[in-house]
Amino acid sequence: MPSGSLLRASRCSWSYVRHTLAAELDWAKKLGLRPPLDALLTDAGLAEHRDAYCDAIRALHAQGKLARTWPLRYLIRHTAFHTLDHAWEMEDKDLTAFVGV
Image 1 (cartoon, rainbow, N blue to C red):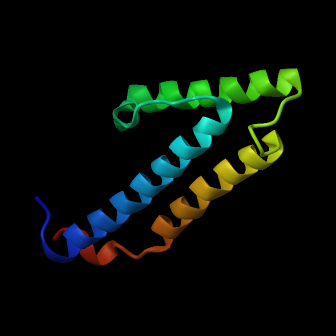
Image 2: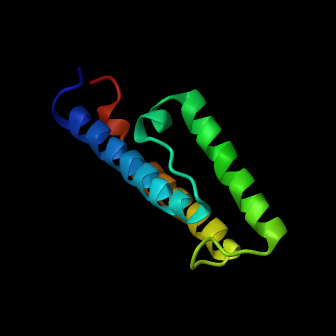
């Protein structure tokens, strides 16, 4: 179990991941998807959710429908930017001081 500064760094990283997944779950409702949170906590479950997310976008696009109140192009752009933005934030954090602790 990490301690001290390393523990704070891992908690910080996990908070980004948790926040990003929670937002994605919320936006999935706009596509008619309601995956259980625990399904996203495994690699296979997350891959399955992301496949369903993309399939739902394709299906709505084929029908010319919105993602509830959002245009699909906005949902796609917002999902991608939100995930990348937090990935960049995590990447920008200098965690080299924690290596070998």
